[in-house]
Image 1 (cartoon, one colour):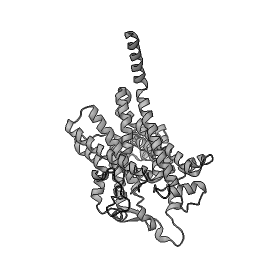
Image 2 (image 1 turned 90 degrees about the horizontal axis):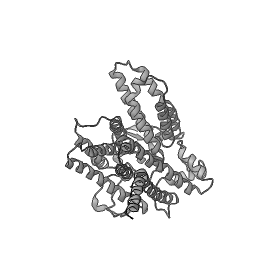
Image 3 (image 1 turned 135 degrees about the horizontal axis):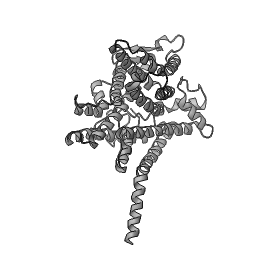
Image 4 (image 1 turned 60 degrees about the horizontal axis):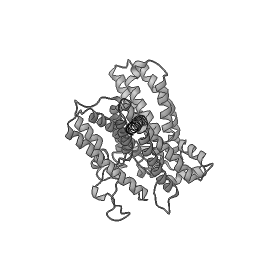
Length: 421
């Protein structure tokens, strides 16, 4: 009997070592898909006016092109939903499509976090931990007072604006942001690699560059917000290096720059359709410049809003200190991206009726997301290697936990049909 038990234990142990992390991730992934499908389905059908989101015009566009009254020159999500609409209602088609695209984000985050933390060289327990943090990152949100947890009072005098003016790395009400994010993740980390190596490659076309160009274009064709910020951030870095090298690196500059050309062409097309306006509506055309013109309309304390949105990455940066600051290309690019997105949100706005939409906040929310992801990877590596004092690690993880607690509560509000702002 002992030998039989011992044999069973050995087989279970072997099975767990081989499949345990995959099973654990699969269970979490299935739960994530079910919860998000439930939310997206309710957003598409509204349930008597509840579940406020941007889904209404998207459903109308899928049902009949042009019937929404808006221009959507970023067609990827609509193409995919249109295929599903051949066998189900437009509402269900959009919900299923968005669930699948958003699910790709979880797969992308898990792959990147595993690769950058060296998961493949570690045991099953570490791999399961990375899987857990994948979903914690995807639920983290802006901070708000803990005494509002579990509560929601709609349209009353003391209504708490959780999201409005503060913003979040995970905006559950915006379908195109969620649909574009998996492609944006691929493009972001490829860009970090390319910026670290492009000056020494000396090729006009190479595999990583082509993959980056495709990912960037696909992201732009799903929602342009990410590509606008990444292109600006990379352009600033590349121009700085060019000037620092006394303009001797023109060839390398253009060899990487050519990867942005398809996306630039698509962005020009989108600008013409989205921002040009109609004849006689010149006041609705173009992009304006004004310090906090749009952001200030939805927030009366912008410094506090910045802190509530980014407390965790700020904390990680602070505790690392200048000497201990990581130099990984993806971490540096995350802060560069965030800086550019913050600057754009602070000074740029869309003229006319679109100003109140604060659409430059989408790039800022991408900036928050990549900061959270990069900071979490850095802190996981620090924790595994005991690179900091225990109390410092505890403080940083506590701040991250606060973001996750608020994020789970915010997601609960969304599931119950609360207004996202």
